Amino acid sequence: MILTGTEIMRCVASGDIEIDPFDRDLLTPNSYDLTFSGKLITYDAAVIDPLRETPTIDIPVPSDGVVLEAGRVYLASSHERIGSNMYVPMLKGRSSAARLGLFTHITADIIDLGFFGCITMQLYAVQPFVLRRGVSIAQLTFWTCEGDRTLYDGKYQGAAGPIASRSWLDGKGPGQ
Amino acid sequence: MGLLEMIQTGPRIEQHVANSKIVIDPFDRRCLNPNSYNYHLGPLVHRLNDGQVAETHDLRSAPLVLEPRTVYLGHTLERIGSEVYVTLLNGRSSLGRLGLFLNYSADLGHRGAVHCWTLELLAAHPIWIYFGMEVGQATFWSVAGAGPIYCGRFAQFDGPTPGLQSDLEWLG
Image 1: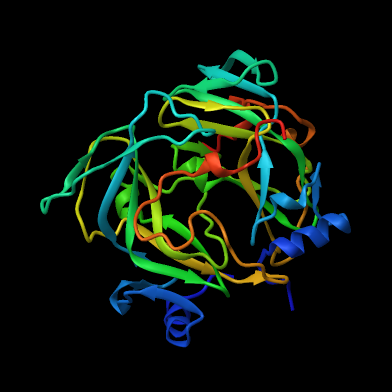
Image 2: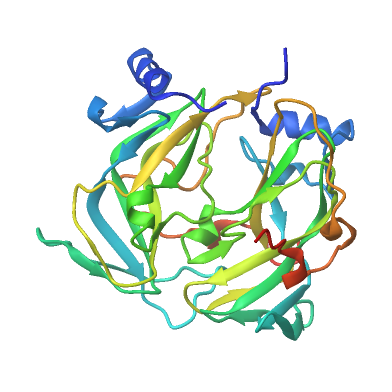
């Protein structure tokens, strides 16, 4: 079941959910609107190889915003540090941004139970899009789960900004 | 009281594979996450052009570079599914962060369909893909209410399967 905004607020107060900083004006009926931290990176390679580390470049975000090129993936981080050991977070784009052709996190929306950190959002613009610090382009939902819990202990734990893929640390090669 | 809709934890997925309420075959418990299972990429990849298969590549002979603005269909290495739980097939954040998007629109697998799933692959940037790579996550959800299980056209296929215009019911 998806938690209501009221329940999310109750869980933040009780410590079952972390959203820091928390602003009750960003609660919606079934989610919490995350804001863009101003930290943005993109890849610097002609062809990406998941088995190797791909270099990234930092994209400055001036006060009047940065133009996201169409057809390129950018990684942006949330201003908020989030997480829960009780409820499974799932990241969704906000329809306001999607209606402008900005895809926020169009794959892999599930965030592991036990992850704590700033969310790295995959951004993909269908046409050029101006992104400004502090805008909300994604929303976080929380879901109940069934069964014994194991908690995330992986390579993106504790993120303080956008983290590029660490797929090359997977440790299992092709065909294994 | 009806069943509540809840995502299954990794330990619960493992229990259900053991008691056959969930099928993941082959199964490797190292691929379990707190709330999902990492599935792998099967050998065949179709490149589509105008809705038709223009080229088929076998990843067992060589890896492949996926090009942007092109529709590719791959498939899971594993047979996956359940008659009890709803399966959602999604990408992994490690590959999403590289701009490799899986099942970008239709991630819902109906209850009752148990087979190797067709994967819609979209690359934001040119990217290598390899046979057997951990390419996505499957989550399993309990359902609210009773209802029929899936018995449609796609359940019979274990390889990448394009859609047909005739699959889209015209309600006009």
